[in-house]
Length: 102
Image 1 (cartoon, one colour):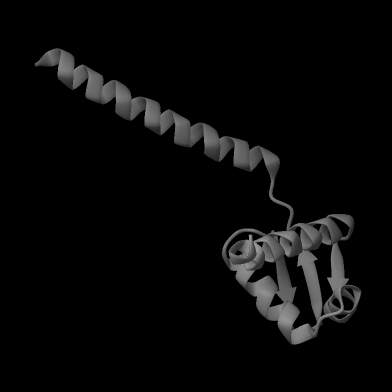
Image 2 (image 1 turned 90 degrees about the vertical axis):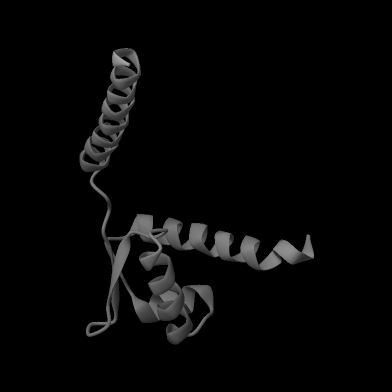
């Protein structure tokens, strides 16, 4: 269990960040860091990593010291998923028709 402690703590922080960001459109970086009892530099570095990896949907405005949420559009995500599944289906049909024509 000890070997997974870093992973577990990171995942719990992501969930906590998501929960806080879900409640607000924007949050000051200083109050965000203060709520979690960490430095602004640590929070900025960590949020940057989570945003880059797609785990958090927000952006950091360093000039104004604000974290702004960017909620993903549900219809757009659904549309992209349909396109992806449609492409996979077309590929399988194409492969099947080549096998049948042999």
